[in-house]
Length: 224
Image (cartoon, rainbow, N blue to C red; front, side, top):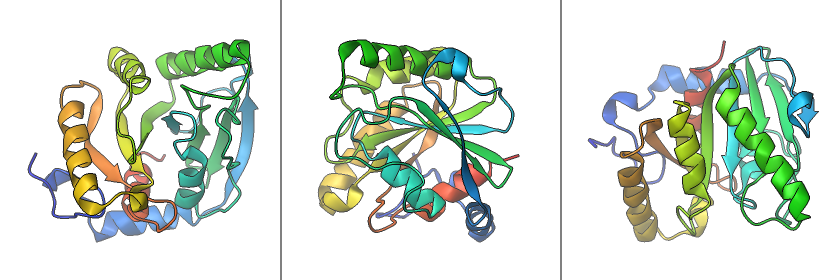
């Protein structure tokens, strides 16, 4: 991959690196009102498809809610918890009448009853495999740990559904630059073997806002 030179932000092929216009488009979109629209604890509770959707997915406690709050510029849009398994439904947030953001329950370890975990795992699989308005999945990976076994079945499901997904490494501020560089290269190499993986890797931090502008730019391109 011929990468754009950015050691602390996203890792892009040069042709995918956002320019100033794309960055500004992302800023303008995410300056618009973002409001909660629906919560779906089961398949039959999913709202009708409409606006283009981007789903935030990842293991429990990967930092989904923190990143979603950082991207939207809201401190309390998505509920942040240090207890894995707190989010037990898909929450939908409408951004400026142009884009729907879906916050999925975390998969993997969760402090919840096994039946509840099984139910929302089934919900996630149904949503990812058959949502016609879903334009891209943002698969979050904790930069302190890298790809783990629970991530790979999700990647396989997305490949089989031919559903475009991009990986964002979270909590990058908690990893030393040399280790982060090694991890980014390793993850990018693995993604290159997946048919549905988008060829850009986002290095992000909700705390210091690393990669937030570039992520907004990418999501703005998917908006209606």
